[in-house]
Length: 107
Image (cartoon, rainbow, N blue to C red; front, side, top):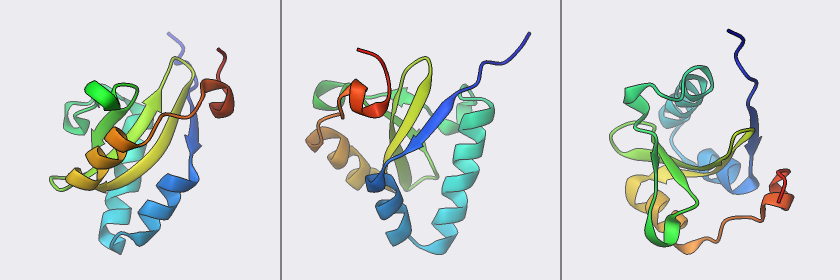
């Protein structure tokens, strides 16, 4: 069975947030993203769809303290923020999701 290729988009908000984090957390972020690319169903990632005002977003666990916020569809994963658990969920609750056309998806 052939694996379908997933496209990843790194938003400026993700890159800027990641740059502000300690170097050791940066290494954990990339390890987490490699795991997501290889097998998004790995239980350690705790990939979960958020609810309420953050409904279009998903969260993955970088470690006990840090989370990455992303958008997903069948063809693309867009990484939009990374930070402490509280900062990440605050971002997801306060930031409207980008329009799918802007993300490169179809309407």
